[in-house]
Length: 381
Image 1 (cartoon, rainbow, N blue to C red):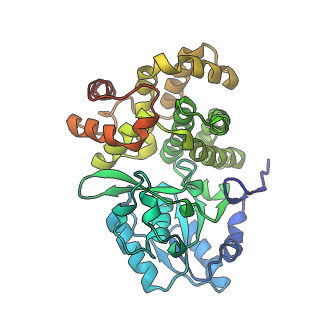
Image 2 (tube, rainbow, N blue to C red):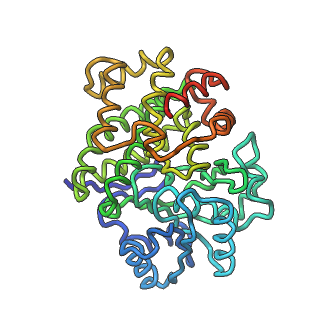
């Protein structure tokens, strides 16, 4: 089944297999004539990246790449990227890759024209208004995984390497001007990345759906995003060449990121400090945390997730939904605890403190306190 579409919501999206061929035209549409392609170290020399650079070079847009991006990108990566952008005289960014490449690329485009330090723009109150909006460079986003949905987001998650805290840098103009969602770019993902990124998308949808904030549009998007993950992630995991499954997972990823404007919760509040301190894969960490968080929030979300279960064709209401999550995790060899994830003797106090100040905390259906968050974390250990 071939899925091809052009969407204008939440931004201009060119969706379909083979559409990376339109990368040069997408740059022109975004007003970019000399792009810097920003990606992560693992993708820098892969065929999908070199082929994209070939297309840009053939179209007369140059061949510039910055790939000094860590799995959890930090302010050092951002500074190096900004330096490369300025030195090359670029006028826009192609954010290319999974969450790390997308987030770092967006921050480079955002910060290259600013004069204030990066942390002055953390997503606190109206700090984003400190930015010179006219100096933010245009962005073309090209996801190569199906998880974070950063390609349709207005923010980036950047780790403060000094404090080992994940910070959110936000500005409305960080939303990419054009997105190319080409499922063929995800075919080469190994199974554990397919699982981790796919479950990240699922976590976005689940937490958005359970958030107590009022946002009916996000509620509907989150519910359908869950269905796409339920139906297509097992297929993509079993057969990485299943283009229909890969395409629907790309949709689910974008839907999750769109939906979580409604809020996230304890899954992300815990996984952010865990990932920042111990450098675990974000989506996999979310998946490890999810079963315990669902039980933690049960008094507030049981009825809501029973409704979701009915829509998804899952019997047993809330308990059936939780059983489905356990089975999905097990089918893709997700660790059952942080210990199995490789974290030994964690600093519980530090993780709890980080969780309580994380922006995701405010979207959790049950108020997170030092006492109940510690108890929750100990269950996950």
